[in-house]
Length: 346
Image (cartoon, rainbow, N blue to C red; front, side, top):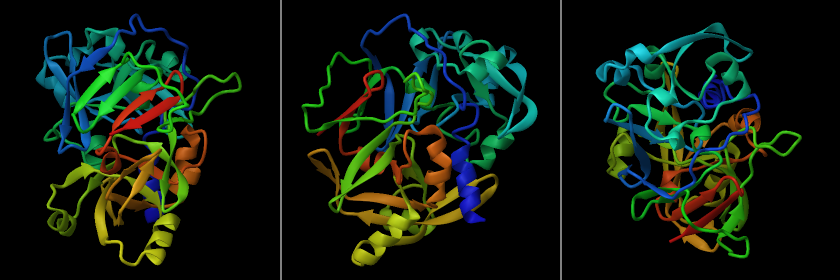
C-alpha cells in the first residue's frame, strides 16, 4: 500500500504530459538574470514579474510536472476573473473539469510562458498554468501558508539553458556559454523523445558516481524532504529542506555494505493525498559529479517501482533516484536543454 501511494505521488508530476509537445520558438534567447531566492541554500524559488506589477514567487522543480498557480494568489491579487475552465478525458485522470489561466495574461515576458502539449492545446488553446483546487494542494502538503504562489515543472525549463548557481544563489536564463563534452565535468542529459527525435518530456536523466558505481538519476531541483520531528532535531533543520531520493534496493545495499553510514528511521514524512508515509533517510559521505566530489548528501528511500514503473513514463531510461538540493547545493549547474548537456562546477 505504501509503495502504491508514494508511486501515486510521483505520478502527479506526469499527468497531462503524455502527448507530444508542440515545436515552439521563443521571441528571445537573451541572457537574463532571474530574481531568485535559495531557501536555506537548497530549494530554489524564482520571482517572476507579472503584468500587474507584482512578483510571483514560484518553486523551481525540474523534476516536477504541471505548471501551476495557486488559487489564493489569484484571489489576493484580484485576478480570479482570468480563470478558465475546460473538460478533460484522460486515462490516468478519468473525466472531469479543471481550471487554468493563460500565461500571456499573467506575465510580461514570453520567456516565462510554459510549453504546451498537444493534449493541452486541445483543451486550453495556449500555454497555461493549471489552477488546482485548495483541497488537492492540501493533500500534497501545500496551502496558503506556503512561501510560494506557484509551481514550475518540467516544461517551464525545457528548451532553454539555465545556470543554477547554488553557492552564489543566482539563476541565469540562457547564459552566454558553450558547453563541450571534452570537459570531464560536462555530460549528456537524457530526454524522452518521439520517433523523430523530438523531446516529449522535460525530465533529464544524469549520471553520478557513488562508491565507484555509476548511478542514473533524475535531475530534480525540487526534491524535498518533509522532516519528522526526530529528523529536524538531529539535523537542526526546519520541516521542509532540499533532498535527494534513492531506490529502496540501493538504499538497502548501502545500509548493508556501510553500517557506519548514519540512518534516520522514518525521517522523511511523505504527504500523499491526505496520508503520510515515513521513509528512511541515509547519509552518503560522497557523491561524484564528473570530477567533482560533493558531500555529505542525504538521501530518502523510495520504492523501486516509483522509478521503474512511475518516472520511466516521462524519462529516457529507468533511473534509480533523484538528485536534488542535498547534493546540488555544493555546485553550480549549467543545463542546456536544447543541446542536451549539463555541466557541474564548484
